[in-house]
Amino acid sequence: MAATLRELTDATGVTSKVSVRDGDDALTLLRVDSAEPMALTVRPGARFHLTLGASGTILLGALPGKEVGRIIRRAPAECWQWQKPADVHRRVQEAQRQGIVTDSGTYRPDIFGVSAALCDANGHIYAALTLTGLIHGHSEAQLDAFRELLAHTAAKLNQQVKLRRP
Image (cartoon, rainbow, N blue to C red; front, side, top):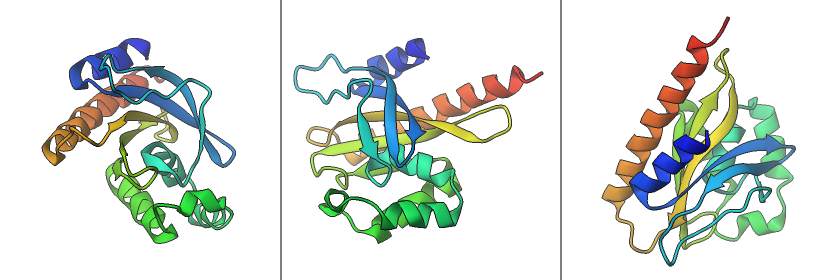
């Protein structure tokens, strides 16, 4: 996985990471930071409430609707500084339909995240593969290209897992 993250970061110039669900949080397990002088970094072990950002959205999308509703209702107040519960529901629906989601500024107004679902051999989401960085200096066309690259990479990884299934 580290090699895949390095390839994503080298191709895009932004930080790549893998996160998993830990209770109501997304937990960063592994990351490769951008080499840019002004870039976002997310340290391994960092935790973010599932209602925040793209990685949390992918992980929420793996849950039953009642569980999603419970997590959103019980989210801490700071989760609603730049978004509303309806924004989270909309992103979850997008993630469930497409297996990928973009968050531009609802976690923090200066940060974007693009995340795709990583699935086990049975097709269950176990992690989020994410590209993240500062919005400034990244056009919508770049974010679309990041999204396409990430979707392709996640699909390739998911297919490899299926092929290894006994």
